[in-house]
Amino acid sequence: MSISKMKKVSISGLKKDLRKVVENLKSTANFQIVFYKNQNEPLSKSDLESKAKFQTQLNSVKNALEFVHADTSAVSISYDQLRKISKKEARIIKLTDKLRQTEGKINSLGDQMDKNQATITSLKPYTLLPVPLSLTKNTKHTFTLCGVMPQKQWKKYKTDINLSNYHYEVFPSVNDNVCVIVTGNIDEIEIANAITEYKFEPCPFDFNRTPAEEITFLTGQNTDMKSRYEELNKHRRIKSDEVKLLKIYYDYLVNELDTLTILSNAMQTKDCFLLSGWIPAQYERKFNIIMNRNRNIVVKSADAADTDVPPVVTKNLPWVSPFSTVTAMYGMPSKTDIDPNPFVAFFYFLFFGIMFGDAGYGLLLFGTLTIFFIVKRPRQNKRFLALFMLGGISAALWGIVFGSVFGNNLFGIQFLDPMKDAILFLALSLYLGVIQITIGNLLKIFVKLKNGKFKDAVLFALPHFALMFGLSLCFPSFISQLLGIQNPVLQYFIPWTDLGIYITLGGVAGIILFNGINKKGIMGKVVGSLSGAYGLVNYFSDILSYARLFGVGLAGSVIAYVANYLGGMLMTSPIGYVFGVLILVILHAINIGLGLLSAHVHNTRLQLIEFFSKFYDGEGKPFTPLTSNLRFSRIKT
Image 1 (tube, rainbow, N blue to C red):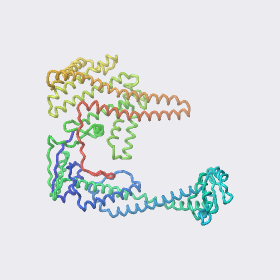
Image 2: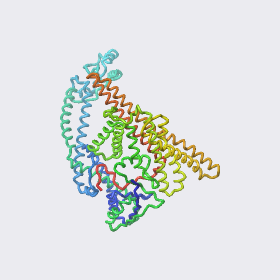
Image 3: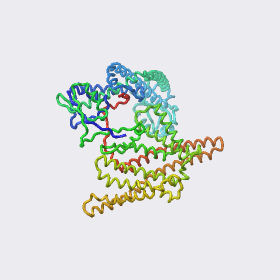
Image 4: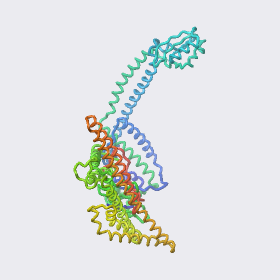
């Protein structure tokens, strides 16, 4: 559980071997390349042609995968298998062309059916019109107005306009409208056109069939097209090995495009190239074996210099790794830091269970995520989900302490009742804060010593540790006497009270004495000492921040109790049982959601602000090895 040592590596050779070198580096998945600024070497003509070809094929394969509704499950292959998929290019192109043609036919049929349906909808107001719509157009000597208008507007139009010189017919329509045909001498068309002021909507069609006949024709046409549409849609379901082929080829194209980007950014001369980067020291031997297979290149490695800023890789046990997601929110450890993940793992795990402390909730969370991992096998956010899985275990353990299973004490075991023993619960929360801050100050001493700052470790870090360590010894006894709590565990600390007081006072004295030691002049030293004394107030606010453990934990217990109480009140009849169970499910679901959110947010805040502020800078850069951002493939290393 530490920060891995990094080696600086330089690789040089003939330019013609650069592509092969890049491919080998990708296959190791352990080399982080360092790009040089303003290189951007233009690609050769053949590489530019390849880039255009790969991009075109990538779009084609992407469309094919979307057309067949391919899932995102990963295909596990070696890097060599990924590269060799290019040998099946002809088969893949034939498959994508076939799928593209099928998709085009499906889209064409779909568009035509939509167009027909829109026409059918527009024709419905004219259903009772007995003549073909082509006969409702103007001729050389006569005009014909055909359209739909509100029945009331038609009556008003007849009243306002003298229709004795015209011939008109009216047919029922939809929505209190009427279908109207008005014909007359072409010379009278301007007067007749006044009908447009009466919400008259002219018919836009000129079919050679009556509206009813056209609707029947289009409906039959849609029925035939729907059968062909459904038949073509069956071609979406291609064989699983064809889907796998498309997935791997998609990632092959992504990989090739990525390689071309690297080639254009590498330092190059007319005939040679130079690549620089970093590898974890433990992989140096294996890395050299792979790279030295090519005898035309030279590989050199060296330890990082004091001025270098190597990327960071942390080595942690499997159960610690998920908690690195919390550390990453703050920043990766720099070369002057220690790896905080083991300490974050312990405290985050502990605090999560306190705030989400219910055996039923915890087991439900752990079980649900376990099933999700088995069934879905997610590739992304695995560590974050594992964080909550471990949180479920912590919640179940603390649920035993609190005697809570979905808010009920089912087993008769209860060491601490968050509601009845609220004061003791608050004291426990604050004391855990004292312990974490104490450990944070202890780690600060280690960080100072690690970086050769012995004076700072003794004069500045040690007094702060002494203050909190002394407080951790006398705090339980003070709480016991102040609150009148007679608890066997608290009584155990009584003999340590006096020693704790002396250590605390020694820490305070050290802070005041040494805080201004580096200041110039008497006044500077006095002001520095006073500043150190004033800074002690911050410790009280830091410790009080841990009251959130008590607040969130108590709130969850109260909501669970209310849910059970309200649900139980309703369970007095069969219908009451239905509503009672419904109330239980809803309120417990809300409690789980709020509890999960609060336990993670407040827990993370305590780690990042209260804990990390004591010893951790987090200014390191994560190690990002040279690999392709593959979507469907998982490369076996």
